[in-house]
Length: 139
Image 1 (cartoon, rainbow, N blue to C red):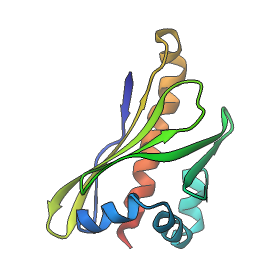
Image 2 (image 1 turned 30 degrees about the vertical axis):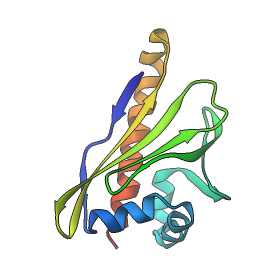
Image 3 (image 1 turned 180 degrees about the vertical axis):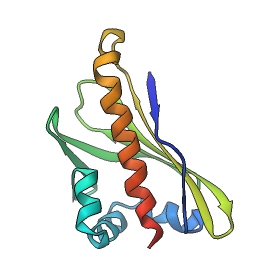
Image 4 (image 1 turned 90 degrees about the horizontal axis):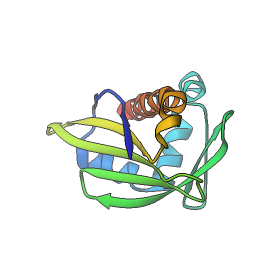
């Protein structure tokens, strides 16, 4: 399993509040709709259907994620459905101060060794973009 981690960022929300937003697809949908369009464009195409987060990429097409693990208030794991390779989006939350949270995003993927040099940079970029998107939850 390969792990690609974005750089940690601090969000101006208590970790319990941030956890409740990230562990609930409906809450994420509501918050995402409030993010400015220029930030949404950087994140790529995202949409929410039922209890799924759907990411659209030019290389792979649609990837549907469901919440696989919740560990309140410190971790949420989204797992790709029907993916040819196991792929998880992981959000780790750590109290920075009582009113702020340090967030680290990562992608855990089971890549064959020969594909890592080709796909690894895209996985790293995706982990960074996910972190940027979550950092926008300051507002």
